Figure 1 (cartoon, rainbow, N blue to C red):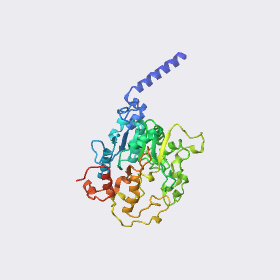
Figure 2: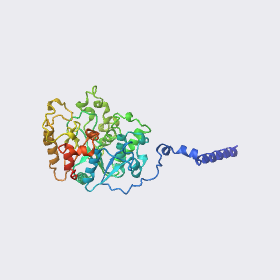
Figure 3: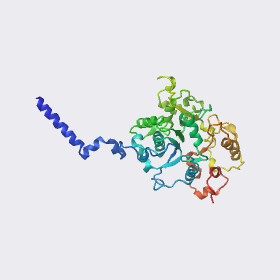
Figure 4: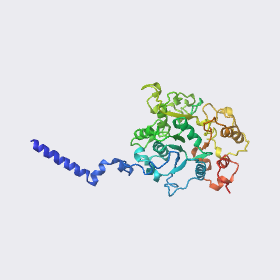
Length: 396
């Protein structure tokens, strides 16, 4: 009886081995390869070959920019990229396209259904993985870089920090949206906090393609992934859900406290597992004190710096609004009273300036449909003047 059972088990083992060595059944034990088209066991081609001081951006458009070999950027975005090249300082700059992703990261570091995600979510997930492996700066492509970021990096390193970024409300001012950390600028040392972000984004999204499983679907792989990590190192960060400016969510869904990123984590700040971690230092500023201008959502890039037309009554804006308590009522006064003082503000010794770049929202959509020559024909716009301040050559 025993010999018979042994023979049966041996026959079963041989049968299973044969199944594993046939093409049809071998695929059954490689679900990752079936879904992604990649194997997960090899290091990316560029790992160990990219310097830490690298600025990273990502752009993908199925029609106009499907790959690195076939890519036409919108003219205003292309001009932003030219400011990156002009002012990269001692950084390298890499604009990653969809066909280059696996050169830099393994698809195991990205959500399983990465290729089916929307481009903004792809960008957030990819930046998390790039900063985890290589470090550097994740910079949204729709940004005007006015001067190099070396002083930002040098200050971070000199102070022993591994992350530098921007958080709303850290200056004590309310913000009307259910968000805390911004991901259009992220500066980090390699193999730091973004290694946690990679793990969390893979586990958090699982095999889903719908980011609505997060509290804030659009910020799922950005703020909703990053803020819980930052909260482990600083329990006193301002709480989105406590901000009175977001509590009239019956009118505006993105002002619902339930959308706040603190809801994507255990309440570390209550000390449920012990005190905050002190082995990692992070540096934070409020974006509204620097690169996020209060009129960034008002069509500013096409404004004229000499236009004195009265645009609004400052008293009309409630607390938490981008324009609340801003000392300007026209394009000219906004340029002179807000932008120029920030740009020329002298930092303390060893600190980086408040404003070294300008964040353009919606990829500068004010210029959609215009050609490069159309955009550059008006020499009096904010956008043109910023390009000149960035040191781009004469547009003749």
